[in-house]
Structure formats: C-alpha cells, structure tokens
Image (cartoon, one colour):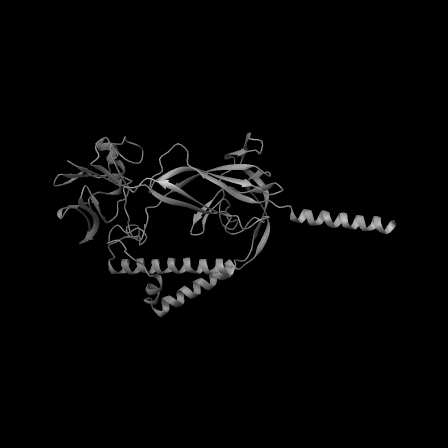
Length: 380
C-alpha cells in the first residue's frame, strides 16, 4: 500500500510538470476586417486585425508591429526597436461576447528567438539577393545620371525612367562584378549568423495581457497593390481578387503551443485599378460625372486602353529637367513639369480650391487632371 501511495504521488508530480510544460499561449490571426468601405487599389485602407490567444494560459505581449518582406508582425523585435507609446487603448473581446479596454502599459514579458529552419533560411536568402540586386541597379542608374537625386529614383517604383518590364534576378546577379558578388556574400554571411542565433530572456516593455480565448482588435492600414506592381503595371477596370498575407510573430519571439498557425492568408474582391463614373467624390478620388470619366490609381509611366483609345502617361528627365508626356492614340502633348516644386504640389489645392496637385492638361478632346492617388481622364 505504501508503494502504491508513493507511486501515485510520483505520478501526480510528474503529471503536474508535464501539463505545466504543455500549457502555453497560442496566438492566431482570426480575421482581417475592412468595415464599411470600398476596397480600392493603392490607397491605405483602415482595417482591424483580430488576434486571438487560442492557448491555455494568459500572455503579456507587445502590440506595435513591423511590415516588411516577412509580413506583418504584432510584435516588435526587442533589440533596437521602439514599441508603441504607453497608454494606447485596445479593444479586447472576451469569450462571453463582452469587451474590455486595456491600456498598453509596461509589463515584464518573455521573449524567445529560435534559429530559422532550412526552408526559412532559403527564403531569406532569396529576399536578400533580390534586395541587393535592386540596390545595385539603382546605384548604376544614379551613376549614369548624377542629376537624379536618390529620392527621385527608386527602382521598385520608377517614375523618371521607363518602367522595369521584367527582372530576372539570377541574370542580373551574374552581371555584377566579382567585388560586388563578394560584397553580397559577406553581407549574407553576417545576416545568416544573426538569423541562426538563438536567445531568450525577459524585459519590461509596453504590452497588453491577452487571456485564453480573448481577441484583441489591432487597428492597421493596409494597401492592396496593383497586380504586377512594381515590376509592371497591369491595369483593369474589372474588380480583382487580391490577397492579404500576414506572418504573425515571424521571429518566433513567443513560445506557443502551436507554431504552425502563424500565417494568415485571405482573398478579397478589390475594385479595379481603373474606375469609371458616375461616382461621387471620396477622399481617394474625385467625382466622376459620366461613364467616359476615368480615374487611374497610378502616377508612373504607363499606357492603357480607355474608351477604345490608347492613353499614355510618362515622366522622364531631359537635360536635367522633368518632362511629362501625355498622348492619346499618338497625339502627344509635352509639358515641362520641372518648375513644380514639392512645396507647390503640397499647397496647390489651396490655390485652386480642389485636390489637384498639378494644372490640368488637354490632349485633343481628352482632359487630364492630377491627384495624389492618380489621374482623372475625361473624354469630351
């Protein structure tokens, strides 16, 4: 009997440790919600990211976020990154359907970073290589034309040159010099060492507490990209299927009971990159009175078919001056826009009484008007 009691006691203690070890939080993105708004291309839309603690124990976690190549994260990295300001209010939904408000206040939180898997490491390598190649393309362009400032030329969003139609990273990488390839390898080895480093600990940081079953509403801005952008514009007046893709806690700062459910992907129907009238004015586009009034959500270099005519817009640099070219079925209008400074663009609405950032232009019977988000094209 005595041996049985000892055995039961040992089993009980063992069970306590086992279950204690298994009790962990589990953070999952429940949904991404766009409320009472038209989903548009290329404009920042208000969204709520709903994050649930589906685990067995409460968790104190930071709730600022990063947006980058690895996706959107609800956790800042503790090294060298600032979090949200203190006392930011978050709405938290309880399992019983009620809500509570919690302030983002300093709490002691734990963090953990594990080494990347081989698959994750391969993906990081690919992203680093693309970034390095794009940077070298940019440097070469600046070298060829020193009059272009760094702010005016961005290879991922070219406005002063012809748009990049295709980009074969492997081909472009092979064009680099041996010194440049060695530079990339050195940077990658340093980056790889950081990615393979493991560490853990605690720190005080602004955070909220999320209990089991609770869902926090994180306000965020999301922008749907034009398909093919930035490599090539693919405009359409038809609604399109676009995807929200988010990686939660990409650095695995939080030890969870399930590390496989941190990726969220969902498709949404988004208005075409070209919209037409009649439409009332909104904060993102002007009023469109007729079916032959169009608004294109882009300001870069492109050609597109509208009203059975080819409409083209481009901004190039000629003799150190920005020149805008507009054409409709071959009929072209050329304008010097170098005189329009950023200051004038900012306050053009004050002078004209509307949101236009440049004077309107005419090509034949077609009128172009320029806005922060794109171009209004009107056929008369």
